[in-house]
Amino acid sequence: MSQQIITPLDEFPAPFNKQIKVQEVTYDNGFKLMRIQIREGKRFTTLELDADTAHKWGQLMLHWVESQSPIV
Image (cartoon, rainbow, N blue to C red):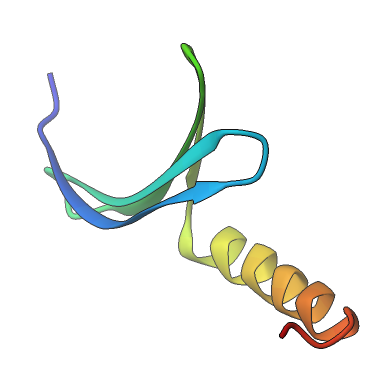
């Protein structure tokens, strides 16, 4: 069984009563993933992303945010 080191990165609320938790998961072979866990009541959705996928998703999210009306 492989070991994991889980490092919390952030946790914050999201719209519609959701809670988002972001962690870095390091496996015993040194491989790292970003784990995103979305909690909605008793339901959990978990994504584990490699650096390339996280970068692409992050750029897409940033582009979308910048296209919205200014946040006050």
